[in-house]
Length: 145
Length: 118
Image 1: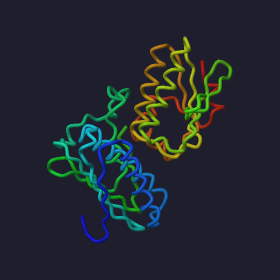
Image 2 (image 1 turned 135 degrees about the horizontal axis):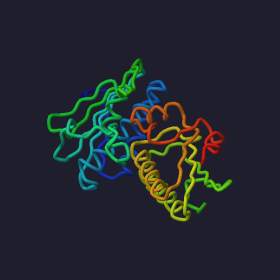
Image 3 (image 1 turned 180 degrees about the vertical axis):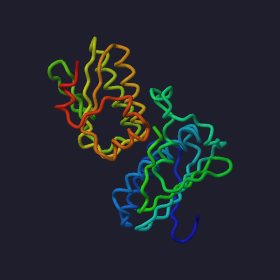
């Protein structure tokens, strides 16, 4: 992804820094003229990705960093979030929409990212997620009943 | 409401009505404080009846959903009731996507939610 149009933030692994990074990216999304309705999805997915990187990837270790790369245009937003953790297998996370998991307070972040973003990919190691939202995207995908 | 509270709390007909002062409850620090404050309200009541209004809330995260689930579990353990109301359509869709619209009793507005308490 890195090119002249891509911006990069490197933040310590604290929730406060993650929140500030989210605000920086969302200001860029708004300034680029990306529509408000799909911006909801970007904000939601970015929050989940940052939270996962800080909490699960870097275990809230402020000495570790999270790298956020983003490219915005009026019709497309692409964001990559990379942590310094060991990575994980996204397919190994239980389905939070199963009846037996509904009253569990955790485990919905990845599902929300996948439901709301046009395209989501993970690095082989699993410590980097790249998410794209296009403004003509008709998501979120509703789960099968 | 304490000085640092991010909630507006009113008691009406034995029901505790809660509104959020922040439009954006994504911030995890705020979510944790909100959860603790509501948990304390539940502890104060033998059989809690809580109505949480999402009027003015524009964004929420899975962490906020997790806090709501914990609140719901705590209220159920005490034989109480929880209702949610005034949820923006985009946020309501998050409940549908996660199938949490099956876990929570959700109403269009606070008045409809109030009359639903048993």
